Length: 425
Ligand SMILES: CC(=O)N[C@H]1[C@@H](OP(=O)(O)OP(=O)(O)OC[C@H]2O[C@@H](n3ccc(=O)[nH]c3=O)[C@H](O)[C@@H]2O)O[C@H](CO)[C@@H](O)[C@@H]1O
Ligand SMILES: C=C(OP(=O)(O)O)C(=O)O
Image (cartoon, rainbow, N blue to C red; front, top):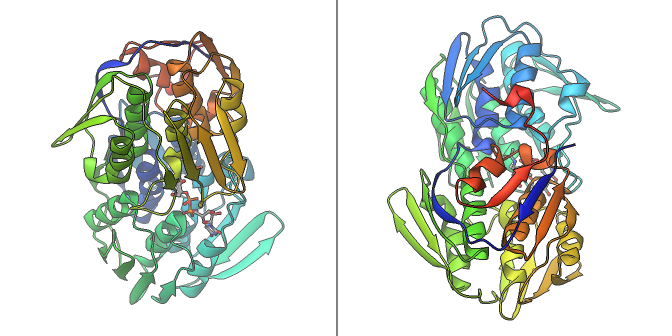
């Protein structure tokens, strides 16, 4: 198992180009199944989750190549809509295949998806949405079979603005007969990217980015070429790392509008941020200030995917901060690991009460999930001494060789074994 070894205490400095967004690329890859032929997707990061998605698509009969950051996907020979259990279990995003496969084949067989242990992560809203479009759903233990000779537009109200359910319903509804509306839809930038991608294929969707999305069904879609948006969570991770190490970093290829809530929090913590077009400059020379209260909530509020990283900054702040997690019930596991590095954090239900300490100390810690792992890397960069982060495969799900990215900014970080061969060009 790979480990990251970090010698902390060195401010990050320099310039970095931000990778394409995992959470946009994954549904877009699944949505490519909606058109027959070759779709080319640019700005797709080299990540474990992307590799798993491409392996699933190959298993379904597609031809897929990932060269540099471009994926060329030929769906012509896709011949089955049964996704093997072993592949479904490797990540949460395998569930994105339900909508497109149902629309393409009229039947889909999947299993409960896998993913990080950050909460129960039910899929009831996905299934209710597909049922509303006319699908019959059979659940046999872990196996889910979904059938519909034809899908029909419907008015669907989500009881919670689930990102994945919104995307799955959009992908199923584009080829349905008639109009679908999704109310209380998720508003994340990745939903807007999916709308743009599907519309480039010939779909008729409006409203992504608001809480009501309207989809006019069309007869067919055509393959296209498309570029994925920058990864706001990777950008946010680097911004927090720059602040926690009291460094100066320039991020290129960002969409600052997608990072408004983080920028607001960092400014409250006393971090200097300058935005210029798609460039964000982050600088900090002094101890951060505590931020009284941060609550994770659906976009545009503060994202759960940056909660653990910001927690690290607050462990070093002057004063007491409160960080409340409202999206995932099991997403505070990094607290124990940070405490091993000298952080003073108390958990009360879903809130972390963080009493800032002057410094963290290196330790051997375990990445319990993707963003918790990224947070521990930031903690290691800011800490005195050596930190070893174990279970790095979680981090590889979302960061394209995090150690290379950070080394380019002057960090002293190495991986104790090479990146798996299938992730190198
Ligand atoms: C690949 C991807 O885009 N992943 C993101 C997506 O995950 P994902 O799409 O899984 O997140 P959701 O918005 O669906 O989940 C949010 C909450 O709703 C609950 N829920 C969801 C669906 C459902 O059918 N029933 C149900 O109860 C979940 O358990 C969770 O508590 O949005 C999350 C919330 O911004 C992010 O943390 C993930 O990084
Ligand atoms: C939780 C995340 O991803 P996923 O939904 O793929 O597990 C994440 O990107 O932080």
